[in-house]
Each structure stands twice: as structure tokens, then as C-alpha cells.
Amino acid sequence: MLMQEKFQTLIQLLFPPRCVNCGALVATDFGLCGACWHDMLFIGGLVCDKCGVPLPGEAETGTEVCDDCLKIERPWKKGRAALLYRDNARKLVLALKHGDRHDVAYPAARWMALAAKPLVKKDTLLVPIPLHRRRFFLRKFNQAALLTQALANELSLQSCLDLLERPLVGGTMKGLSMDERFARMQGAITVNPKHEELVADAKILLVDDVMTTGATLTAAADVLIEHGAKDVNVITLARVAKDA
Image (cartoon, rainbow, N blue to C red; front, side):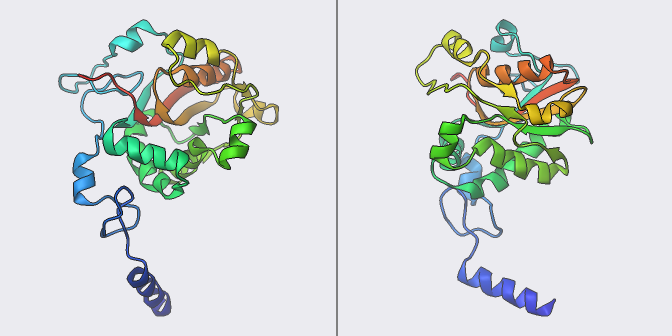
């Protein structure tokens, strides 16, 4: 035990913990420095019960829904997000998604776990939004799966990383209107035949990195409900919100 502690001390001296956002020295692994923590836009207080976007006013016992979720039918029961997709949060998401910064998944899971607490039960199954095989081949990993693994560990819950599949090549949705995004995603996600038995009567928490319009999460929730899922909720690391 003493030898192990000495080894860990040596590792910390050689490779001291650094802020996952800016690289400054910090006290613990996978943490944020004071400045980055101050500028990180964590979501709290009163939020939309369907997508997790912050709302004006104070949190009460009742539920509130944002304007977008009043207009758009959400097939899932409840949704939450840990961060607003701006500034440092956007930087971290892009680092995870395109910068091979897999270490971002660990602090992200801690933040997501706090937001997801109202959505999970002891038998909730965590499921990531899938990537098409071509995109997975190019990227070598699925960022939603990385978040799912870390979040499952944080919440001590089970996960199934390949429960959903994406057989259609969707392409980028950058620049598409809301209607175009929903049309693009219709039927784009399916249940993996190997895991169909896991879906019936299941309580499922869908996991993704960012929610913009909710088109991708809708496609995933729809197919899970079609296959008999009892309860579908969603959690994302970040939520795109309209400027105030």
C-alpha cells in the first residue's frame, strides 16, 4: 500500500493534474481551474422538463415547458442537460467530439449525473445515440458512447452501447432548418436485432453530447417506444439555447 502511494505521488509530480479546459494546474484530475469553472455555463434552477433548457423564474414543485417544446412533440418523458452550449462548454464538447479528448468524458459524466438524477431509477438502462458506421470509421469512436460509459459508472447503472444502430448515412445537419433536420432523421435510427429483448418494458435514458432541435433524440426515442420501451428520458452534456 505504501509503495502504491509513493508511486502515485511520483506520477503526480511528473504529471500534475491540469484543467481539462485550459491546461492550468488544478488540485485533482479531470477538474476545472477557478477561472474556467466560473465561466462554465452550468444549467440549474428552473428548467424545461422536456429538454432541460433554463427558464426564467424560480424552480418550484410543478413542471414547466419551454416554447420550443410546446410547439414540438417530444416522444420522451423528461429531458435534462448539464451545460449551455456556449463559450467554454462549446469548447469542451468540440474537444471531445473532434479533438480526441476522451478525458473530457469523465468530468462531463459527473456534471451530467447531477442533471440526470430526476430521470433515473435503479433499473434504468443507459443507451447512446449511435453513429453511422462510416462516421465511426473516420472518427474511431462515438462521443455519445464515451459519455454513456462514464455516466453509467458515475450512476452505477447498466448500459448497452450498441442497442441502437444508424444504418442510413445522415450527413451533416449544419445549416438545415428545424423541419429539414426532423425530415433527415426520420427512420434513420433502428434497434439492433441482437438487443431487441432489452427494449420491451425497459426504462431507458438516451445519452448524447448536444441537443439542438431534438431531431436525433426524437428518432431514437420513437424507435425505442415502437419496440415497447416503458419509459424513455434523455440527457445531454449541452443544450443549444436561443440568445436571451
